[in-house]
Length: 312
Image (cartoon, rainbow, N blue to C red):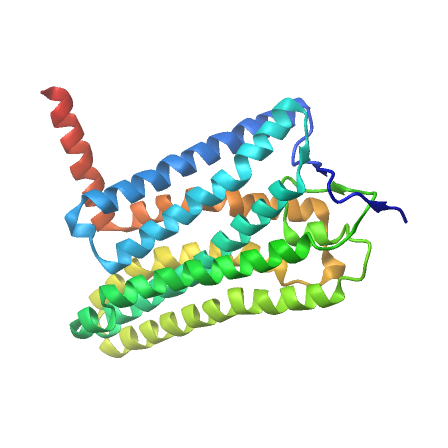
């Protein structure tokens, strides 16, 4: 098979066709993406402005919102430009940047969610020792570590994915550059890389997920030992929002990266990828604002201040 010139552009086939139904879905996706950016930006603003939210838990939540904003900004603008202009090409450098930012943000989010679960474990199981066990120094270390591990994985996968010679069939059946989809175009055996990528996925997905399960299992055991309906209710209200976010993020990510290659389906992959790159970032601020009284209180206070300024 003829080897394709790696200095040429890739072609992203995209998520939508130019039909009436797909145009409606495209507008819907843009609306969701814009709402996601606004919702996460509002969450970051509230956490920054309200002194009551200056706690490790909410600092970690602000990092989650920042990652979601960056994730949407990495994927949606290029997808929208390709659809509106009809120019579906993307340069190898642009493709590498998308892979790098996507893996970096996804990996960092895994560890941030694990850090948030540890925070809840300490707050519920060891409330008197919370300032020691969940100090600001530890919180900052976990945050920096999450970004660093995500960036290391993103840099490795982006560099490795673009190092292969690609065949003349340079069309990517996706709406953004994702490492597993790009590697399918390689003209050489990629078994070793796929094996290494699988190990990275185990480390970046299953290890944080295992820590999350351990944290919430310990929380459940501690709450059940207290035999208090009020304690159970409070713990459930505190943890249920985070469990929803964990499920919405890890489910689709595991489906894409951890299932056997024989089950790959381009159309299914595109739909699932759209869910956790565009739709899930919108749900995070909604879930946390609806299920969290402190965030609701900060929002009401902010709206009251805005109303007072307008009245004056």
